Amino acid sequence: MLQQGDVIIKKGVVKGKKLKHLTLAKGEKTGHHHTITQGDAELYEHKGTLFLKVLSEKATLTHQEHKLIEIPQGDYEIGIVREYDHFAEEARNVQD
Image 1 (cartoon, rainbow, N blue to C red):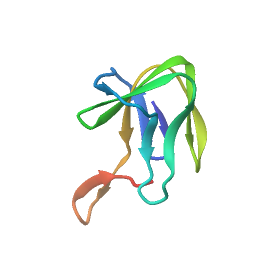
Image 2: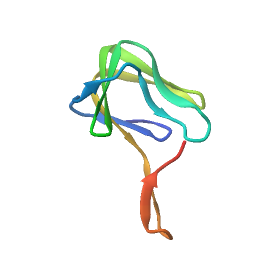
Image 3: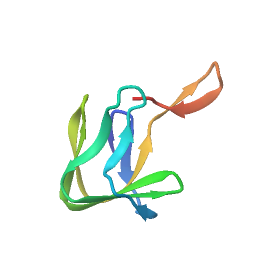
């Protein structure tokens, strides 16, 4: 499993509709984004979940405030880190 900020990348089975971009997540407040900038990859979406297929030996995930991450060739499911608010008694996605 890999993580860059609030984005989690774990091995998975790619499914869904192929997207025309390679942005895994966008910041809600800053406009920053987690995007594949190098390597050959495809991004898919199925029922609100993103899946990444890295076709080249590796792909580089870039974000304006985090270190680059190299993702090895393979199939991945993309998730967002969640936090639990004990006062509101609810879980929510961490905002980047």
